[in-house]
Each structure stands twice: as structure tokens, then as C-alpha cells.
Length: 278
Image 1 (cartoon, rainbow, N blue to C red):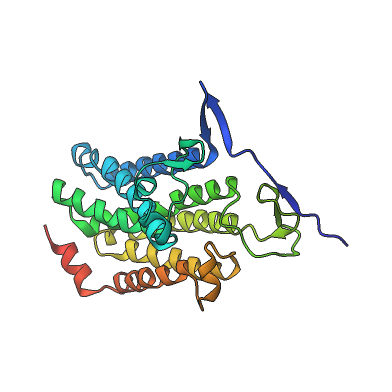
Image 2: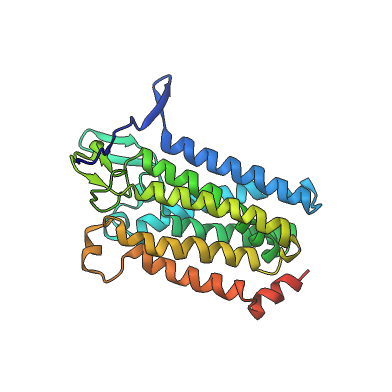
């Protein structure tokens, strides 16, 4: 029996307004940020934290994630190119033979976004006097849902694809000029992160008193990046240099985050100090 593969070739542009193209990827990012904002506000209300303290967090995290994700991609995956083209690293433009053109940020790293988020939360806590670990735990509860939508954006772009497969749910990424099926690794990640988010909501209901201890932050890092480490085994290399690595760049970057997650989850002394700090 011949497998019935999924022919995948959506238009990357969702709609256009006065000649300005809005991509599905951008919409998924916007939805991910909105859901993070909405769910964080829900947690703050449940924990009886004022709106005055809540309101600044969005701009801090938006800039932290965007800047971190962009710099992470440029420096982790293509440093040789972007260090010699710093303008294209910092601005959403690219130089073609016909001249400069606005292309958006083509390349964002989830690991870089996480590091940028850490910096943003630290700055937010300095500004609002919030406890760092309390905010990180809340982020841990809501982040998987945002991660799920970002991976859907990757699917709409036909990027971060898996290895070839003969499984019937394989995707033929025709936009990439291919006529064979691959694992839809982006979809695997998106569905897994959605499941993690749902599980976390039940855990939070039972363990809300542990917010501020590092428990949810550690649970988030450990679950997401442990899965990320193993899913990389069925992903195609993102840069040619990875072909010579025993484990790829995504796996190398996941290991310290898993270690940090386990440390927080198991109640590291530093996490407890942060929780006790006023």
C-alpha cells in the first residue's frame, strides 16, 4: 500500500494591506505574545498582584524575546555571515543585487529567545521590585502555549523540517522544492508543547502555593528542552556545519537549560534564596 502523504505548500503570506504583506509566521508570533500576556495577567489576578505591577512586563518581555531570538540565531547558527553583515543582524532588511529590501527577521532562535527573556525578567524585577523566581515560575506555567504557536509559524514557513520518512503522516514540503515526505518536526513540537501547557494548568491548580520556589520554572525548562533534545534527532540540519557534530547546535544549547531546570525543580539553594528575597 502506497502511503498517502500530506502535500504541504501554503502561501507564507496570510493577507496583504496596501501592499504590505503579513505572514502567517508573524501572526503566529503575535498570537503567541498575546496569549502569554493574557495568561500572565490571569495568573497575576489569581495571585492578587496589582495591574500597576503587571503592566510593564509585556514591553520588557517582547523586546527581550525578540532581540534575544534574533541575536541567538545570528550568533549561534550563522555567526560568520552576520558578524560581517551587522546591519542585517540588527535590522529586518537584506541586501539584494537590486538594493536593500525589507524582509522581516528571517531567522529566530528559541534558545536565544529564552536567554533574552531571562534578561528582560531581571530588568522588569529590578524596576517593579517583584521577586525574580516568582515571575519565572509564572512564566513557566504559560510559556509552553506560546512555544506551540511559534512552532506552528515554522510549519507555515516550511522550515525546521524533519528527516525523510515513509510514515503516512509525512509532509511533502513542496515549497522547498522537494517531492518526498519528511517528518513534520514542527508539528510534533507544537502538539507536545500544547500538551505540556494543558498538564501545567492542572499542576498549577494543585500546586499554586509553590509559585516562587522555582518549581514551575524548573518544570518548564526540563520538560520542554528535554523533549527538544530528543526531537532534534529526527530534524534535518539547520546549518551545514552540523553534519560533522555528534549532537547538533540545538541539542548543545538545550543541555544547560535542562540542567538549570533540574536544579530549580529539585529545590536548589539559590532558588530558595530568590524565593525568600523581598
